[in-house]
Image 1: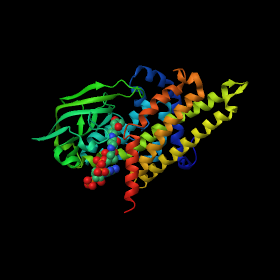
Image 2 (image 1 turned 45 degrees about the horizontal axis):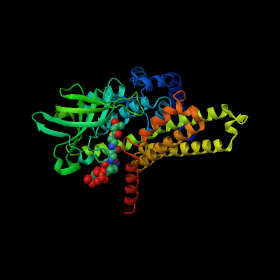
Image 3 (image 1 turned 45 degrees about the vertical axis):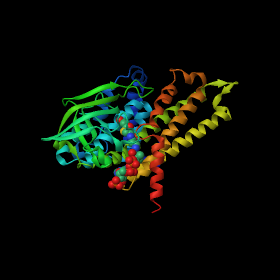
Image 4 (image 1 turned 120 degrees about the vertical axis):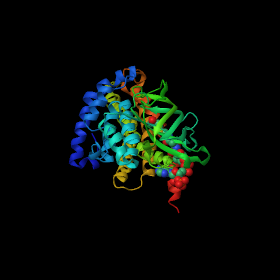
Length: 385
Ligand code: CAA
């Protein structure tokens, strides 16, 4: 059950009923197979597209569903509770690809790229990190060389979610590495462009059904009209995009945590030891109480960040807090969920084993927990001035 406040809005409640039913009846039954095979959930993404879930916050005139960020967070939590891989596929397309084109693109770019992305006819990826530049992207070195009619891109990107399947890549490159973040530009690249290569696919601990790719740009020509925003604006586009992305990953983490928590309650009510369900034991009740409290605390932070975004207020700090709290809650809850399940929780027969593996990445991608703390502290200190 969702809890009170944003869902009191009738249209949100209807949306959530629809998404919850889809997540439980269509996505969840496939999650184990998707985790085991690493198969991209093509048919689920197609259905999510029909439901407007791949471009949820994009205005309707640009092919999206025109919904707010709170609805997005709530929907993403439900989908991720069923399958965290599907959750991140959805999150990247919405937060990291549709958003920057919607916020910084011109009308022609929106018509050409945003409409099919928001409709789910195309899938996007976001390429910022490089082998040597993860937490510190200001130093990135993928080179953008100005040529007649546009740019040529050369270099390598790492850890790119959706990199194997993406039709469109929002990529960050520098025209002049000597001027740090001021040389960074954002480009919209068609992945069918000559020289665009999926160089390597990562074999991972979790979120197996979403691809994580290393991309190589081998002198990829990008027409000038694919520059997103202005030259030198790329770093700010990346960081402001990640502010919204962090709300998405917080919601994904909430979904993983919710799944582990619900499984723990059910297991504790059914599993008997010492002649009674283990839910009667105070040790287990304390686990459940702490799980519920951490989950709801993180959920309220996530909704609060989303509400700020919807209200047009600053949300850099709030999104970082939400992502930090939700990812750490997910990891903690998934760990305790295995403890509640005992030996059963260590087997692949129970969902909590997958929750535990899937939770870990939420503390890493779109900014590690340590980066979130840097962002939060910087914002707090800036408020002194
Ligand atoms: N929005 C817009 N602009 C921002 C901003 C924000 N949130 N934060 C900072 N800026 C601006 C600053 O105002 C500053 O502008 P001026 O130079 O004009 O004053 C400029 O950006 C540089 O700011 P900083 O000096 O604070 O930047 P920094 O280099 O010290 O970096 C950081 C700050 C917080 C550490 C940042 O680098 C960061 O967030 N790192 C983590 C990166 C990350 O999340 N990577 C994940 C990649 S995506 C992914 O995971 C892949 C996937 O597929 C899921």
